[in-house]
Image (cartoon, rainbow, N blue to C red):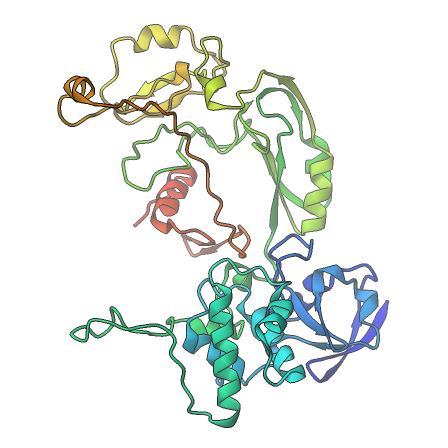
Length: 432
């Protein structure tokens, strides 16, 4: 299908699949402000565009709907090296943090100010209601709009953004814009997906539907035969190297209890196989061709279940100690499951895999018995911590390329050195 539409004031003619996702279409056209934070469900707002005068989530549109449409993206704001009024206000106020959907925020606020010269807080809340902002509160957006409105009449206008302190220091206690805020708010290339080359292959994972299971049969021959499939990786052909997904120091204190792929599944979504293909569509189709059968095991769904005497053992493979092996290790391993896999523990950390304990430590200060004896009241409570999800708007994505004999990795991670060390071990490369 050939469609005609206007993009940021320029006429466009494209041959498209009528059902193609508009977020992907615009991103591939270089509109990197139109980002995907929610797998196309349209609740995060990172893909906001102005569609025929209205703010719309691009991922909820298909290409056929662009026919004769007028589209504006955040790329229409400002100039190449000059921020728009709203973008500059966002930088000055400090609302730009992760920056991933700040271009969308700039577009939404610009549209609001084009419609309403001095919006109320209720009108601001309504305009921003479709934007998921994880690293800035509404108060900062109120300040952005206050500053932008003031600068319409006085370009040099300022507002009180935050209190300052410590006159003897130059940076601490002072308000400074984020170093890369301007680049982020303009949607300049700074995230992983911005660096992906046109000829890059795509890797997709087949994941376990079971919380606890053993793979009893795995046939990837049909997937490998699909045109466009480059490689299929499973526990049968991946490196027999163990690592820990946690920890940042070296040597890692956490048990090295993971292979790239294992025969045993330990959670829903655990990796079964990976397909490397020339396109996402081919990779997804290849996943459907993988034949896998499981022996479903009883899962462990809570800490109490994991601590029970008859609890299923999550890591029932043999254990290898690098240093400090306990005297009971040989006997413990004699009862381990023999699947050709094992776990490595670098040094003693109170790990008891047969009891589902990865690590343990006990300590106290003073005479606890005396403290309890002298106490007027003794209160006993059980406290459970919970897992936190930071909900980043940037997707979990990784792009790798070879630069001579060096492997270059672009990844959305906060632990680059840990990642570097782990990958080097897995692929057999030196880190320096």
